[in-house]
Length: 396
Image (cartoon, rainbow, N blue to C red; front, side):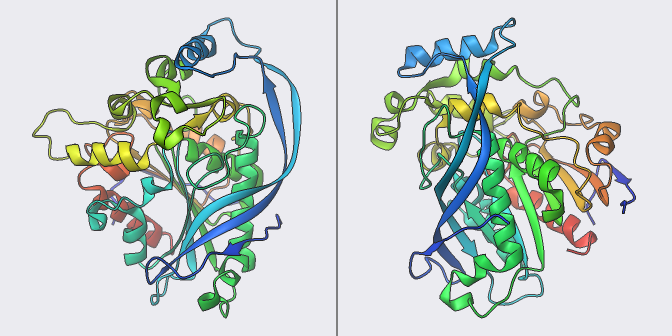
């Protein structure tokens, strides 16, 4: 059984369309690459911060974002009615009683979907492979503006409200059978019986927006690298960018040279380490191996957009009265962004019940020794098992 810091039982109270394309044979027996065309109607915001077209601009942008008196940054609304191209991988194990349950994985900022599917010792580090081994189906996707997904305007389009609507569509497609209908080998299947959402960091913010606005679509949630507000003193929003943010095409012209104005990346591998990694000393058994840091920089690192950074605190994340399933907060012990590198005792049970008043169960688990990037630390699979054991305890 899962060993939680605390366990709190809460008594439960009483379609976005999409036209996806199957891209051909799977890259692995259970997995299929998809490009999803997701129509979105949303209301974005216009911000008055400067544009980012150079490294100098990025530093200035971060300072302006952090300015104490810069409290009225929005200047109006922007209606969005567009269809976006989203790259995803659908994995369905050939056997197992849980294959009718799908986990939808939403990665965070400064990362792409490879965060969930590390191919260096994948049996230890790949969340996707561990979830498949546990019997679950998985949808792992690149968020809008990231990886193989579409890279729209970084200021007016790639914002959190749009991200929530895309995640809403993915959940709807899982529920109504559209996802399974995309793959010829799976077309005879009907739909997924249960839909579980798993988020990391900004991906947990997007997922919390989904729970607040469309909570009835989600049967269970696991939020990592994230705590509800007022738990702990998080880093000032702009501080990370002041120290680490640079204009993506100048950071890496080969990978990100064609990214447009407003796309911001970590300055170098050590900036990525600051955000994602923790190792108290070189012999720390629960820290990270150097090759994982190098892998993360070369394969996982990705730019963010000015718009998503500024809009993440503007969407409705709380409360989520329509969500009646169980929720687990799974945190790395030394998560710098979520709880200033010490997540022991950082969870506020009272606040959690206010945010999720009708949740079936609210739990909190701390993965020993891990930093913000849970999938990139030693013994990552033990954290995955804790989450899967928790799901099993909830009948999932």
